Length: 281
Ligand SMILES: C[S@@+](CC[C@H](N)C(=O)[O-])C[C@H]1O[C@@H](n2cnc3c(N)ncnc32)[C@H](O)[C@@H]1O
Image (tube, rainbow, N blue to C red; front, side):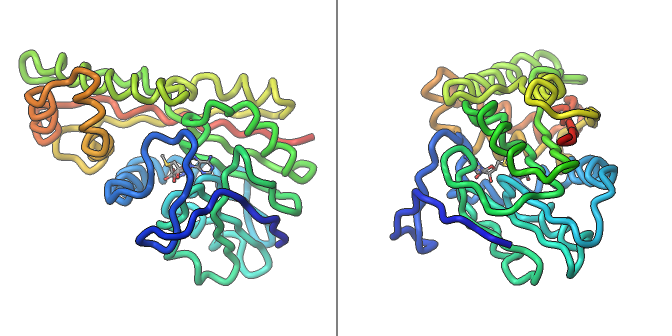
């Protein structure tokens, strides 16, 4: 698999390098990133694997997982494509990709999908989960990724529609606290150019960018207080606690929010994951 170099690495952090992250709010440099990848995997890997399986990805395929996080989906793809296939896993901050570095058919790299030179070669399947939502340049990125597809190749983009995740059951009055904290979190995302509702635009966007045979899946479950998936809210809010306070959320609201996430009487719909698949002509 060919690879063109990338830019933006500065030596000297605890991991041997620090990374210039342009706009991503939930940087991988804090311990919460690992817990975030766990929470995402526990709820959403089943849906992502079903959608990827529907492409019939198999032996010999060349795949690229963009913004691969901790590399779990990359490792799963590597199993599917076997020794004759290859999987490139990239991330603007690849420190959590260490576990997949030894897999013989995987290449992992630091790479900014917005700015860096694109990899050589064409891919049969490109996958990006919960990456484009964060990037103000998401339409440019779609064009870049589509340009890297082989004829007939598949692009699978998965993103949340964060605005369709209502509270389903709450001890008296607590829905207001939950909504205030999560609303402030979504406000911080928007300030960075993220689009928390981007998931609902995916199918249209793939068509507008020239892909055909577009299929959309939507996956959502109920998260109750204390369930593993609800940790996604916990880690996001923990990581941004200072910024949330600066945006007007009080210490008391944050404490009530944390208590709700442990309360089995609390239930909220998980962020719906919208998975859109399209093919290059
Ligand atoms: C919410 S996480 C999702 C990780 C993984 N795809 C998953 O679903 O578990 C977003 C990932 O995108 C990466 N990312 C953010 N901006 C990026 C960029 N410009 N280029 C490549 N990766 C980026 C982050 O470092 C992070 O690992």
